[in-house]
Amino acid sequence: MTIELKVPNLACSACVKTVTQAIQSVDAAAQVSADTKTKQVSIVTNAPEAAIKTAITTAGYTAD
Image 1: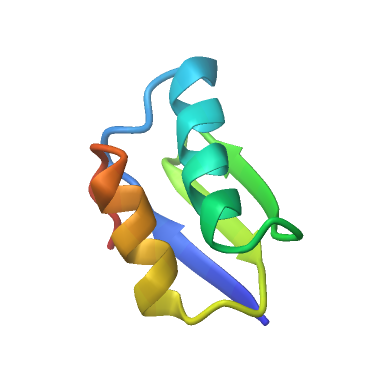
Image 2: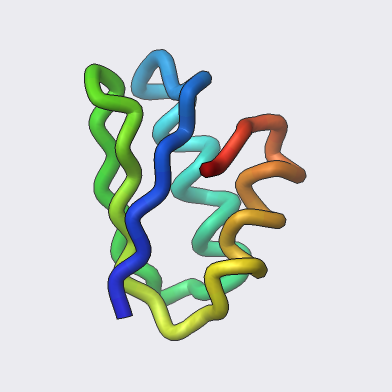
């Protein structure tokens, strides 16, 4: 399943790396693509959306 999230404080490549690692801590096989300009993160995963959002929040980012 693909999850599309808006992460307003996604500012740079280091942010993308941190968010990607947080998501992959929930689902190691997750495919993550993020755009710092649009603040959109697209995740292909089998993990529940709530778990993905929790991981992003725990990493210090907001996920809508």
